[in-house]
Image 1 (cartoon, rainbow, N blue to C red):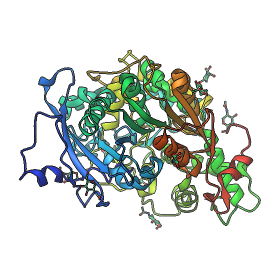
Image 2 (tube, rainbow, N blue to C red):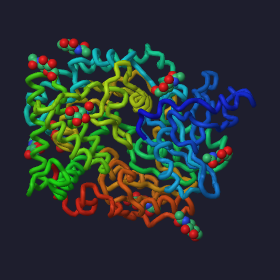
Image 3 (tube, rainbow, N blue to C red):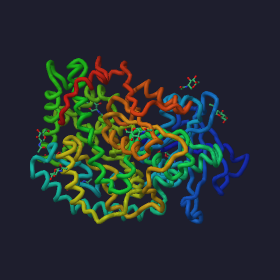
Image 4 (cartoon, protein in one colour):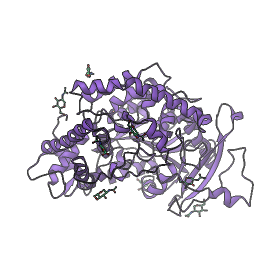
Length: 567
Ligand SMILES: *[C@@H]1O[C@H](CO)[C@@H](O)[C@H](O)[C@H]1NC(C)=O
Ligand SMILES: *[C@@H]1O[C@H](CO)[C@@H](O)[C@H](O)[C@H]1NC(C)=O
Ligand SMILES: *[C@@H]1O[C@H](CO)[C@@H](O)[C@H](O)[C@H]1NC(C)=O
Ligand SMILES: *[C@@H]1O[C@H](CO)[C@@H](O)[C@H](O)[C@H]1NC(C)=O
Ligand SMILES: *[C@@H]1O[C@H](CO)[C@@H](O)[C@H](O)[C@H]1NC(C)=O
Ligand SMILES: *[C@@H]1O[C@H](CO)[C@@H](O)[C@H](O)[C@H]1NC(C)=O
Ligand SMILES: *[C@@H]1O[C@H](CO)[C@@H](O)[C@H](O)[C@H]1NC(C)=O
Ligand SMILES: *[C@@H]1O[C@H](CO)[C@@H](O)[C@H](O)[C@H]1NC(C)=O
Ligand SMILES: *[C@@H]1O[C@H](CO)[C@@H](O)[C@H](O)[C@H]1NC(C)=O
């Protein structure tokens, strides 16, 4: 589901069908399936095609959008289509199906063709494609030189030093000006004319258009959405309640919060579990000990390992105070750690490979071969199911302009600008770091902080109600501890839908239940998708016991040893 390998599926469907029939520019009639570009889609069993749809569903005269679509054939007797969106916003459905075909077929019981698409603003096959507001990475870096956009926010965890608050607030007018200018740059870019046709309502209508072509205009629509994909899901089931087939929403973004608050205000409540997941990482490291986790010494408990991580952060913080051009700031490391909170499957690798390198680099004992360049691939993609590249994997590609797709979607969908100042945004960050997440409250940049200053809103936004009566009961899934789409958001959505939603929790940590293997959860999903069987409301699935987070340490071991306190 990584974003970087998906931009380049070549458009073979039109090419291969060109001799048979001219492609229809009226839109909405058919999808001609053909091979996907082998240089991007490695799985040759997948088919790809296109569908033309109105850019603006309320005003067809505006023109057409072109959706790039992928299909994994059902392995059993086909009962229709299952639509999938991996989140982001801005992640490629095509890339995700290529990378996760087996898993998607498993959880859907093999009885549906798994269909996904690159939504508007994603890649270069769908039109409108990826949104760029800068000509190059160099232009972006120069534009933001010397600001927190490049360095992240420097502080020691909860802004205990009032000087850090002052330093941050001093940047408020500068960053407000920069973000206003970025909005104007986007309005002058070649993406400009598409900005108001981006967004979640368009994604919902696009999915319905594809479903109408594949399964007919009255057929129920089956959908699996993870992370931001749950927002597409909660908008879909309320915009088209009569079309709801079997729907799974996993890793829930609270749709009512999004419809009423600026995204910068929502962030705080999204981080409620993040520090506890950090404690889980420390606990797992302590349990496996030095042989399984490089940060642990004999006899270390979680507190001792935390002290080492804090020492690393403080060293980077101190070094940045002396010389702002250090290769790695504490803000960079915090973002890197935050991304780790998504994926316990990577913790062992992180603590044994990346963490020691970071220590060496910060202590000046290793070459600073870290690129701070924030390319499209390394910008924090807050809702991604799959983490961005780590700090040490970053490559600088001078011409790789950073993508603004995630920002363009979040902001087009968000509430109208309310005159919020950057100072208020920063004060919110200080409060979040002090009260909600010491470790991650000060994460910067994110795709949604520009929204208070973004000049465009979508031609259509769905802002409720979110408690419509649905044609079928849906399944809502959540990890107990999710760093960015926490359990309370899933509980809230389930509460709104009442009898129309069953909530299943996974007793684990990470972003969405897909962050750790669970044959229990796979069974719940496939029984629902194939037979419509829902488990008792409130069912809890365990993570598979043979999945070792660290050598000899599984999820249950960690959960049993987490001290119940905040960091
Ligand atoms: C689409 O993106 C891929 C990968 O970024 C690139 O190789 C390809 O040249 C692009 N195609 C077009 C038509 O721009
Ligand atoms: C998938 O199904 C289509 C028919 O819908 C067929 O043409 C294609 O060959 C199938 N692909 C594979 C890999 O079986
Ligand atoms: C950033 O600013 C510093 C000093 O203000 C300058 O030396 C450096 O070349 C600038 N870097 C970029 C990429 O513009
Ligand atoms: C700041 O965080 C440290 C540990 O990270 C904690 O000991 C301290 O009490 C916190 N201070 C405040 C004001 O929250
Ligand atoms: C600051 O750090 C950069 C990058 O490591 C280095 O090139 C530069 O010489 C340092 N500046 C000072 C004044 O030490
Ligand atoms: C950085 O340098 C270290 C030590 O030389 C090396 O092991 C690591 O692979 C390098 N990382 C990158 C991204 O080049
Ligand atoms: C959070 O911390 C701020 C200080 O930054 C304090 O003024 C505020 O009352 C706290 N909010 C909550 C909800 O505890
Ligand atoms: C499932 O439980 C949640 C509380 O977690 C509740 O809000 C929801 O209405 C329940 N759904 C059903 C079908 O009982
Ligand atoms: C669906 O129901 C059939 C018949 O009761 C059963 O054999 C099958 O195992 C069920 N499938 C799943 C995935 O639960």
